[in-house]
Image (cartoon, rainbow, N blue to C red; front, side, top):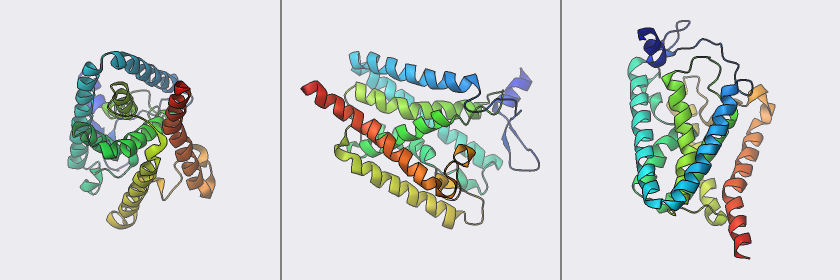
Length: 254
């Protein structure tokens, strides 16, 4: 049991590098490991079930959303502080959020708790985009043993998708193309934030925030023009997340 807990929560020094979670390199990786497909199916099933349930019970849904984002913020905050304190992030303030999903795990709870309506469309849409892309990419299955760090990441990205869906179900948010421009502005802000991190804050370090410096796609898809692939993915997801609900409502009114 002690060995399990050490591997589950602990950090290890491999090849003299910074501390990192336990790894055994025995997983089959994305698109080959059954756990990747199981996670994707589970996320879809949970989102559908929660939407149906909380559409009927909105008061319960509103409480559940608050609990979920409180857990998301608290666990992620403690985890990032711990990583900074043990030297897993060098320098320590690299634990501050600079990637899209990491930023969203902190911003999403704030928007939900304070009901900042003007930020809901960009934040919820970008959060869902980040969550969906991560579920598709399946970055957590290179190891057979799933650590706390892996499960925390999987849970956080699942909540980035689930929370906006519950908000839609309870009637506190509506997906639509009307304010799609705010999502574009939000992405540009994140790109600027990532650029500052890469080129100013951590210029002396090997960073790749928002994948602005190197291709992060599997198999180096897109080569030197990978940013066009990212742009295409963004536009497709924007059309699906905001466009499909808009078309559905229009057809329902006919």
